[in-house]
Image (cartoon, rainbow, N blue to C red; front, side, top):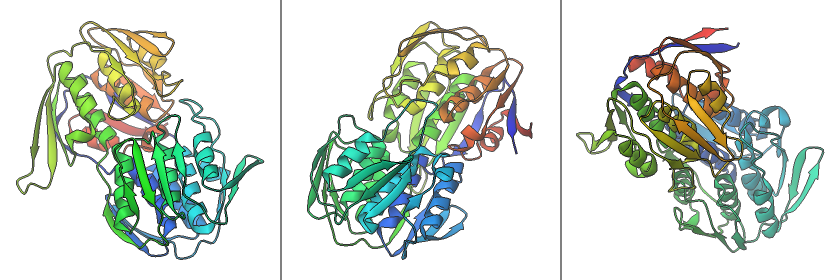
Length: 424
């Protein structure tokens, strides 16, 4: 069933929004349950299309799964298949995260190549090169990665770029490998730390997560876990930016500021007043943002963590379209992540693409328009722009949005947005 969002802009957001569990933590942590034959209980799992996809893949491989609200109980005592078929993998590139766990536990894996991607090629060659150095034989056969290893063996691996999913795949594979693995130029993202924390709770011996060098001492087996996934820093940044676009004031709950500091710094540079605090029991951190009358222009450059995240580029670009002054947005992570520019131009934004940068001339306001989403974060940027625009907007292909945002239209409506989900 195809759906679209209809948004009447011009309403300042206000109120409190609870941040869901992090999609980019949930997917690898769910994949890592393949590493153990014990029961794993995972809390704060977001109800997203990507999560549903990886659950289906795990069930196909033999996992027994019970899903109650935001808690998943998973048992992978028996692995009945080692194949992740194209029909499911094509829906989510993160399916490649099954490769490392399957090789470590079952010594074999057959994973469909993810194919093209709207925001760039995102090749998995770094994953394959790293696993090959650990003793894995790899072949590409009719669109599938076929991998085999009698026993993975630890090695020193230097990633040419700090790929997040590549780091995660190696960490998971190395946790059951013979000997020690050292990853140089490892990704430092909080989601990598979250995965490592969940593995260590099960008996893994992993050190250095959050730094550029991670050391994994392989163990014979892993146990079960009872683990809570971290809040989604990108969802939080999206709602804070939405408040800025609409001239509003909101509080986000269950989020630590250190996971999103680069975005918070840019919001403050653009004129936001941000307050930090915790709940009365000291257990639940929150952020509160008060927007200025009009945001100021700032430049952003996407970088691996702790730099400005590429997953916030599109949303921040939407904000800068109405900022006072000129800005430059430089994208250093993906080569094709400006497809939202043409849609924002339909709303009256003054944007020019120059190689891997967008030149932004801020305008005083946007006008509602019909738009088409092209990928997950681009769809979020269009929603944010529509919230600030004068008049009505329609956004189609919102299945992209549902891959990474839990009930976004409902959460925005609770903050005062005039937004409806309707069948096309």
